[in-house]
Structure formats: structure tokens, C-alpha cells
Length: 363
Length: 215
Image (tube, rainbow over all chains, first blue to last red; front, side, top):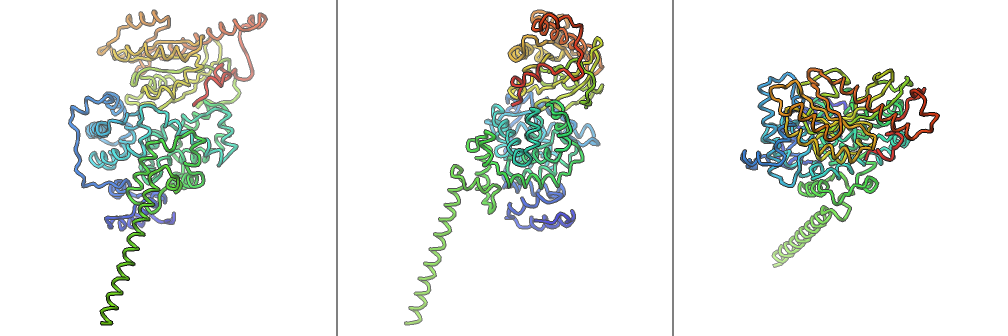
């Protein structure tokens, strides 16, 4: 892992050097999201983000025609939400330019929805899409969101929000292990989890005013397990423990306190804390308590498939691979078998070759 | 945020705003709590809460005002908030026929989750946009009358009739509270002119926590 003291320039150089290898290891790239500055600048992000999802940018993109987009059941809702998203664009941006980008945002969202008829639009999806559009542009942005909507964001796009709700349930089991007193206080006040709903489903894009902070968190989430946003939520709550305990033990006061995210939170530190919480209390261990059906979750299934597909040496959650119900294990077994077969064949061939050489020498 | 110190409070009421996306629920609350209007307001995800203490008829009333997401899929999560609310304001946009025709659906939703003494109110917003008005005051009034609920019209943009709507709703909540509690209190207590306590009175919402537990 990189030292936190490493400056931006140095880190940018290291990332750029890694990217020279066309088959760069995703595991290595992932680790770089954890140290300060993430992927440092937007030029690097444009290359790194698609790589984190194993995307081939040379793939020919087939865009759906306008009539298909207009026919979609969620079209009107998307148009309405995009219209109200001006705050997500840089304030200095000229209105004309912003208008163009908003049209592109509608296009991007609708392409993803038409391309994946099983997905249901939710308010907040447009917040995530806005971030990707601004950094990656409409075409690559579309490819990235299209992939994400089938993995990290998949469960949010169910016909209802049941799974999303059970993902939020992770908060209390994590708090219980990390700070029992705080958890009891919040439970006594019946704060619930709705204060962090938008954090989870918009990757904090809806709650944060700073676009730079949102982008930095995207570095982290793209390189992390899909449940990482809820671990970060726990880290933020734990960080604000004194403020919470000083607030009257009533739902409304604590809800107001927590749902307004301060602008000066130490995000780099919180990313580290979230990562630690994740390793100490991995999602599969808390699933039962959170009533989250880990093996029925489409996000988890598709994410496991994705990790298997890119052949990671260090999967994000080792237990996920150990647990038998996920296909990943069989792939490891297959890989092991293939390796053993190759090794046996190579040894056999070497033995035959050696015998041949020996017999030639003898003759 | 309002301070949660031990100031004298006579009532604590929970008010929930529901209605289609984009009718101006968040704008109404922003106007009422912060006296501010923003032409383009972000859509609400889940619920949002604002707290304001006001004086109505010499009583100090703390209002917990819940703003809810308009998208259908959030209903199951937000439904918990209507439960136990002292008032539910059904908001529609007077320039949108569609939002008006959905009022009945929202009304059914509110009826199912409200208590017997919950005050229901219909509010037509964006009254400043006279040129694009699609729903006349008369039509809205007649719908409200058929549902036996009060009707108000407001403009969050021009700050027209916003405060008045909330004050009138608060007065109705106070009346409903008095009526309901008088019916359930022993005779000697019903004669007391008003309720003065050193600690804030818990709203019945807070007392019936099992009813309003959030998820």
C-alpha cells in the first residue's frame, strides 16, 4: 500500500506507469483507490474506471433509437428528475452547455434502461449517472453505468426496494460490533436507517455538495465490494459519535443531524475506517443479522461472476469465494485442475524428452 | 436546526407532505422553514425532515415536517412516516392535470395509514402560474369537499399562502388533539383550559412507537 504522505504527482506517475501495461492487474488498481487522492485526476480516472469494471472500450456500442427511449415506462420520470438536477453540474457552467449535458444525461440513463429491460429506474440513479457523465463523457459513461447497473447497483433497480432496505440493515450490526453504546443510543431513539438511504443508492452524490468529494468516493466504490457504501455510512456515524450522543435521544433530532453531511468530513480517513470495518466484519458474516439474502441478491451474484471473469488474485471478500453457493469456487477448482493438468503434462513431456535425449546419446 | 433545549412547548406535531413528484413539496417546506425558494430543487430521496417551532393562538407548537419522495417505489419505505402523523398534506400542482388526478390515490394511501384523528388537507401549489393553470380552484374545492377535507392554494415561489396553510393546519391539529383527548380524559381534566407542561409534550406519535418504527 502507498504511504499516505505520497504526493499527488508521485501517485499520478505510479498510476500512469501501471496503465502502460494493457493487462494491468485490477487488484493493484483497486489498492490505489484506498490511499489518499484515489486516482488523482480525471484524465487518469477516464482510463482507470472502465478498467476496474473489466470493460473493453473498443467494444462497438449499439445505441437504441429515440423512439425506443421515449416508449420506456420510466421516460417521463427520468426527464423530470434530470430537469431538477442542475445542482449536480458545476455552478460556473453556462446554461446552454448545462442544457446539452442534461440532454446527454437523459440519453445515457434511457440507453441503460432500454438495454436492460429487467431494470427499474429509481430516483437517485440519475445522481450516479451525472457523476459518470461529467467525468467520462456520454459514450464511455454509458458503458460504465451499463455494467454497474448490472452489478453494484443491481439490487437498487429491482421492482421494489426490499433488498435495498435489507442492505441498509447492515448499519446496526456493524455499529453493534464497533460501538455498542452508540448503537444502543441510536436504537433507543429509533433513528432507523432512512437517513442514509440516499448515501447508499446515489453513492453519496445526492448528499454531498462537493463534486470532488463525490468523485473521490467513486474511486473507492468502483474498486470495492458493492456493500462498501454502507460500511462508509457506518464509519461516518462512528466518526460523529460525540455529536450524536450530545443530541437529544429522539429520532427527529438525530435524523436531522445525520442526514446533513458536514462538508469538512475527513474522507481519506473515513475511507480507511470503512475498509477496516469491512475486513473486521465482512458482509457475509452479518447477512443473517441484517436479514439480507446474500445468495439471492442479484448484485452479489453478478459481482461474484464479475470477479471470477477478471480472474482476480485477491478477491474483495475471501469468504464469498469460500462459500459454496457462489459459482466462484467452482471456477477456482477448475483453474486448479487446469493448472495441475498443465503441470502434469509438462512434467510428462519433459520426462519423455529426457528419455529421448538419453536414448539418443546411448545410441 | 431548532434547539432541542427545554423551552416551553405545548404541542409536538408530525406533519407529512405527500403527492406526485415535482408538485413542490420540498419547495413548500423550504419556503416555510427557511423562507427560501430555489427554482430547481433536487428531488427528495426517501424522506427529508425539517423542524420548526411556531406560535398559534398563544400556544407553542413544535412541528416536525416530513417531506417524502414522490416516486411510487419509495412508498413502502415512506409509509412508516404517515403512520401516526397528526396531519397529512396532499399536495398537487395546479398546472398539472395528472398530479390532480392522482390525488385520489394519495388520499387512499393517507387514509390507510392515518389514525382516526389525523387531519387531512389538500393543497394546490404553483398558484402563481396562472397562464398554465390546468386545475381550477372550483374543481379542487369540490374534490376536497367530496372528501370532507380542507383545501388551500399556495405559491412556494411567491411565498403566497404558505404560512397561512401551515398555521391553519396546525390549528386543526390542535382542535383534533383537544377533541380526541377530551373524549378520553376523565371529567376533571377536560375542564383545564390548556395544557402547560415544563417538558415538551410528546406527540402521540412518539408515544406509540411501535406504530411508527422506521423499518
